[in-house]
Length: 151
Image (tube, rainbow, N blue to C red; front, side):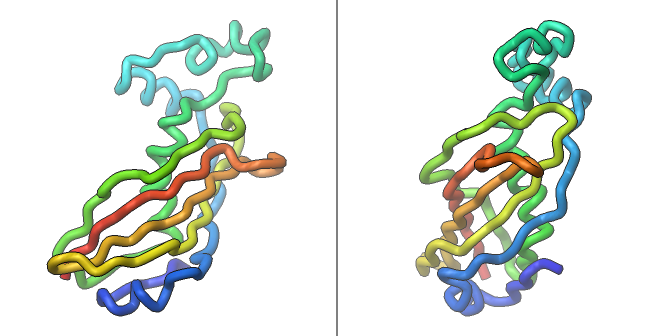
């Protein structure tokens, strides 16, 4: 069950709190191929399973930016923001991809509220995210993302 925020003041109360983990989601070759088509990044480590078997990862892997792009989808399982006129993705302060996401693996997201700053008509929320593959020794993506929510 996600943490639900219904007003701007609630964001301030969440600073320093871990909001939990999403469910695990399987990363399929079809998803990787669709992302490759959307971005034009058809590097063989992503889209050629036969060749990728002999590559450095032993099989195809998801694009790093696909992993990051899944963050807002998975975040919805951890944080529900209601009663706002608008929310926008404002950017990222830092993003790293410490380990690969093999095709066929299961990925989940954990989130913590790093900071909340009042802005005109709303708040700016910085979230520390970790996306991890089931059973992997370290995260596949760590990022601090920035959202703005308006009342």
